[in-house]
Image 1 (spheres, one colour):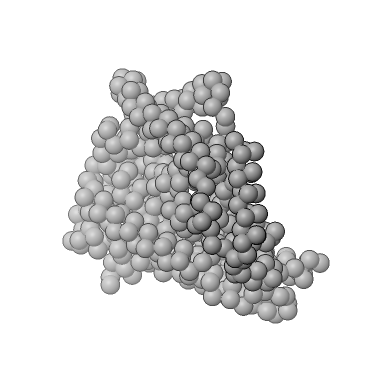
Image 2 (spheres, rainbow, N blue to C red):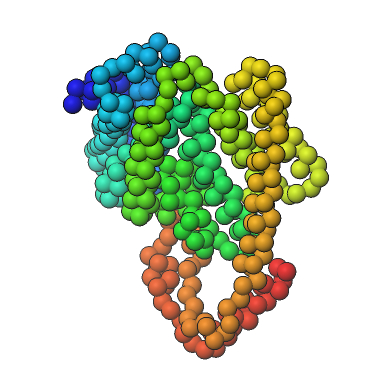
Length: 401
């Protein structure tokens, strides 16, 4: 209990600053909307609790970097490693202290937003605050877990931030690139037709970034199954961070990684999003674009290695490893192309089609009408209608091909 209370005290300065900023921002943003002339429009959950979206990332990263700040200074690292307390207990003391501050901030901010909307008699969905509290606590802790892994693997603020971005965003960026590439190639698919393992909203932390450009997925993100999945992912990453923390050497402090091989691995992971641009369908695979993208990726690789190694010979020896993410990106690109074509040309036999349903014209809208949601549940089994839909599908695929 004492390590936990000490960690809460150590995080109090950062926690209080973030607490005040989040609560004040929630009040200001809420008041700004409630006194505006457009306050008769029903806000979405994201719009109502916009400051908490910012807190998800700022709070998670800052709390982790402050809680494990002793790992970036050799003298402090030696001191904490010499304390008569199990390293595992120290890690979880900092984690639960951060959870305390994050939960208090999210709860207070949600409460103040709800109070402002209630006192000004502005309409809102009563269920929103009940969903927002667990949603943003889990999302912020998911960001904290990624940052905790980074702090346990590295010993400088720069590399900590870089690894945090890799752990938090790289798996989801690869997922998003593959999903977008398949949709772009298949053409007849939408984001709602993707299997669950390609759904970018299952991770509620990175999902908030995705919905900024894919508004149609906003309603999908707040489902309970996504919150539960992200909670499981958070717990798993925290245990992984605890594993790395207990096996970390104090000598890593003030160094990017414990050895050159691990540092080169970080560099390869950092440039992977750049070389995956072709897989996502954002850029066409022309020779000019290929030279540009792979040239930029090589430049980023060299710059990062130069900053962390500060030795020209080590940088040159690590250059061949640049080919690993480059070849991986090529493999993913051709895999996405083949998958998209297979999906587009996969036509079920007419005998296997037993019914059709119509999701409505507002399926891709931010809010859907009640009639559309009810019509979507109707299964049309008329034989002539099924024949018409089947022929229309065949014609659309032929026109695309």
